[in-house]
Structures are given as C-alpha cells and as structure tokens.
Length: 258
Ligand SMILES: CC(C)(COP(=O)(O)OP(=O)(O)OC[C@H]1O[C@@H](n2cnc3c(N)ncnc32)[C@H](O)[C@@H]1OP(=O)(O)O)[C@@H](O)C(=O)NCCC(=O)NCCS
Image (cartoon, rainbow, N blue to C red; front, side, top):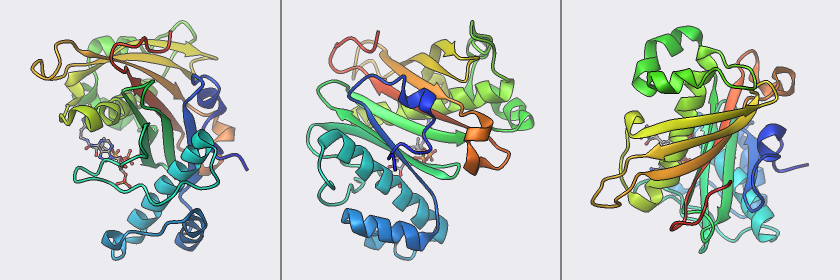
C-alpha cells in the first residue's frame, strides 16, 4: 500500500523530488494504536485522557509522519516518536524539516531536507460551504487574492478559492513558525499568484509573508502546491470535497522551485 494513499496524485506528481508525503485515514482508534505500535510509538501520556477524536487525529498525523520519514530516509521505521515542543511544533530528526496536519478524515505529513528548504507546511481542509465562504471571506483573503479565482486553466468556485487560500496560508504559517516563532495573521501572508492545471484541480501558488522587519528585512517568499481530488476519487469524503496544500519556505537565499 502506498504511504501517499489519499493524497491526490495531482499533488504528489507535481512536487519537486526530495519532498516526501504520506497520509493515513483517521480510522478507528484500535487500528491506529496498533499501527503506531508497529511503527514503534504510542499515545503520549499527555493524551491518554484526551477525547477519542484528538487521540485518533494525533495518531493519524504521527503515522503519516513516520511513513514520510521512512520514504525520505529509507529506514524501516524511524526511531522514537516525533514529539511536539512547547509551542506544539513537531521536532524532526536532525537535518529534516516537516509538517503534520489532520482533519477532513485524514492525517497528512510531509518532510524534506533542511539544507534545501527553510521550512515546510502542510494542511488538508474540507471545502467550506458557499455561505461560510461569504461570511468569512474578508477575514481570510483580500480582493486581489479572490481575483486569482479565475485562472488560465478554468476557474474555482468562491468556496474553493476561499478554502484554498485559507489552507495555503495555514501551510505557510506552519512552514515559517518553527524558524521565526512569530504569530502571523491572515493579512500577513498574501497569495500572489496561482497557476492551475487540469481545469484547476491542482496547481502551484506563490505566497509572501510579512515577517517582523527586525527579524528579517524582506518578506519571506514561499512556493506551494495544491490539489482538489476528483470527487469520485475522494472516496472518504461523503459529499464534501477537500483541498490539500503543501508550502515550502526558502533556505537562506536558495532559489525555490522554478
Ligand atoms: C498551527 C495551526 C496553523 C494549526 O492548524 P489547525 O488547522 O488547527 O490544525 P492542523 O490539523 O492542520 O495541524 C495541527 C498540527 O500542526 C502542528 N503545529 C501546531 N502548532 C504549530 C506551529 N505553531 N507551527 C507549525 N506546526 C504546528 C502540530 O503537529 C499539530 O498536530 P499535533 O498537535 O497532533 O502535533 C493553528 O492552530 C494556529 O496556531 N493558527 C494561528 C495562526 C494562523 O492560523 N494564522 C493565519 C494563517 S497565516
């Protein structure tokens, strides 16, 4: 079974080499506990009395992370658990950047080499309803961002565009926070460009984040990839499709993906 099962092929196939992704359905707790045991970890003590949903999400996220690391490092199972630090940021093995998301029925994780990317963030979200997109739109995206809804490859609905921008900004935040430890709001990160492919079902985005000028003189450039799975391929979703995003931050001036 492919560790990327669940991650839309449109996302996996467009990623640069060197980024490993994996996903795990948020299935029944007993199954997740057993799979984690086989991978060499268990629920941390702090989550032993957490609600079932939190335990399942945590395990699906960490199982995905273990598979992504296995793919990257070529080992049977990475040693030990990926624990979170005081800010809940997962701590990865030396030389690795990575990120975890869980929601919309899946755990999702990605890892890459820290000498290639300054940070990496992932997110998976259910596409919101048109009513939610209308109500929350102005808090998450500006008019310029909404205008990127109409791309050369077709067009996204308002609800899809809202969810894509929301998710890409969450991924950008996760890519930057572990390094800069700065809390950013939606207006601090801008989606500047979107290049869609195959009727816009997947594509690439460019973003820019305004970091504290004392920490860093320029705004941080980021590149990301997104995919809306074909509805019939998105078997676990019921009627609600998802968007998957993965965003990378530059590493000390190295050119991001062309
Ligand atoms: C960190 C945050 C983005 C997580 O997003 P979420 O949609 O709630 O949850 P997800 O399932 O996608 O991701 C959760 C995982 O993110 C990771 N995470 C948590 N805080 C993190 C941080 N500050 N930086 C990077 N990763 C973080 C953890 O691995 C967590 O899973 P775990 O608790 O099981 O280990 C969000 O909770 C947050 O702190 N937001 C404030 C900032 C923000 O959203 N600004 C607007 C966008 S710029």
